[in-house]
Image (cartoon, rainbow, N blue to C red; front, side):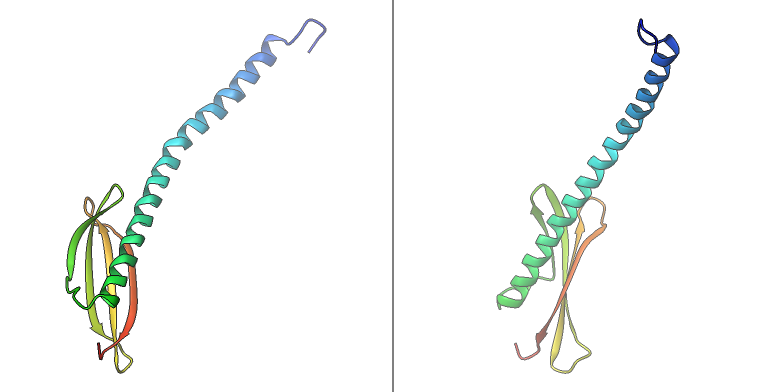
Length: 117
């Protein structure tokens, strides 16, 4: 820089650095939006899995083994399975929640329950 200001080369170098930074940031934005949407779907699936597991354990009338539900904006397919546990006197209850659009499993929750119930 001289007494009259910046030279043309200095201005061009500064613009090139700014352009590279701007392009990098513009390519990062869609990735973060996509990751945020995926995290939201997984969170909604976890909530649905926890709700179904709670109902299966606490509501004697609940006997469904599969279904479709809507949690927030997400349409979810779920499956509930009851199987004997390797430990005597216990059943293992497992809930699996998947995206209705893609079939991708988003959440899986399990708990053990006494067989007497």
